[in-house]
Image 1: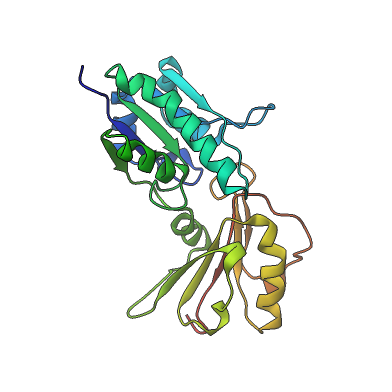
Image 2: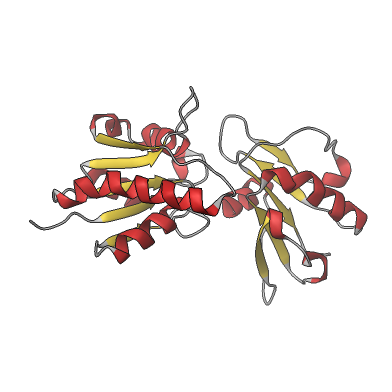
Length: 232
């Protein structure tokens, strides 16, 4: 029997209106959708975004995946293998499955790990682009990220050493626990930055300038920081 195709579908950062037409068509064409479900009464964010744009997704078969965000790489690998094993049952039956992921499927996405496992096991995979959170955040801030010959640097927030010396725009994603120290360093270097949390979601927070705002509050998991080049 012909095996199904495994699709990674970016649903954008939070606003259902930012889901691409291609993403909606792919979701519609796949009989089965998979996504991370954190359980314990918490929302499966990527699924909820997709459902807001395409309510008919409720009628599809669903594979809810329990993948914890942990620094333990061995444990994370076991989670990824277990998750793909649940998906491969459908693929082996000839059913196409799409995995819903926040933002874009190519940027810090769990799909990247699942895609690697799928490819190594001989399954076909496809990726459908989504709007990255930092692009949506720039739009919310009504600013550009790069012009002319300016560089654009993307950092994992918890691994951001050396950023003050770089020219261009610097974007810091993921690692929300590291945001307070990052902001402290930015201020100590005499720099300014913007912060957007939960971009496009109901609880969105926008801080245009950390110099002019109270930064003592806690920011959630979906937070990113943008430092523009001086004068940019």
